[in-house]
Image (cartoon, rainbow, N blue to C red; front, side, top):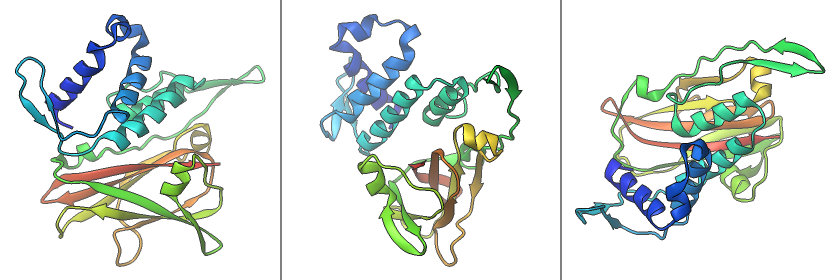
Amino acid sequence: MGGLLLDTLAYNFMKDDEDVARTSLSHFDELCRDFFEFLMNEPARDHYQALGSGQDVKVKKKFHSKAKDAYTIACDAISATDEEDRHDKWRDIFGKNFPKAESTTTNKSSNCRVVHFDDNEQFIEDIYSINIQGSLKIDCEIKSNGFREKFLSQILREHLHIGRIRSLDFFIEKCDIEEPFNVRWKVRNVGAEAKRRNCLRGEILYPNIRNSTSRHETADFTGPHYVECYIIKNGYVVARDRINVPIL
């Protein structure tokens, strides 16, 4: 989404709601959540009129599904009781420039315990320039004992979770970028269990299924994980997508 379109939508969000216009920055989290909800409920349009000039601002790509994902994560962040978990969720939305929590100290049964973990997360923006030119949609085939259970997109639509000890094959469902191109993946584990196991991951990865652009993983432990995919062409990231992986 371009900056002018974002400005226009933000103005439309605020102009018709006096409560929003008067809300202080101390409620920034709720404002973000409500803005994402506004975006996901916007009627489908191919253009908007910019503030002041009335200039046509084209909608190059539908934003509703991304807004819905961001809304869900924002709701989880607001309701999170753990400070680190809350910061991690906002970082999922706003990226690496959103600050991490200051401390990793937890208190259990009146005994103070420090959880040590390595965070080697990589960001595609540090490796390639970003020039989004097309759309990408990824999905995941979930298998148990060699038999397919469901696709991850169906799990998410039905608000279900993935069981542990599952085989996960992430693949490109749709992509309108003309070949040839390269594919990179990112698998990020989130939550207390990932930190306890020192397994946050987050490195930029190559496909690992032979003669394929896909990525094979396993559901080993619980947590609100996610996977991202990037299409690389001529040294640029030209399309990207992300899918949440809720494991119980």
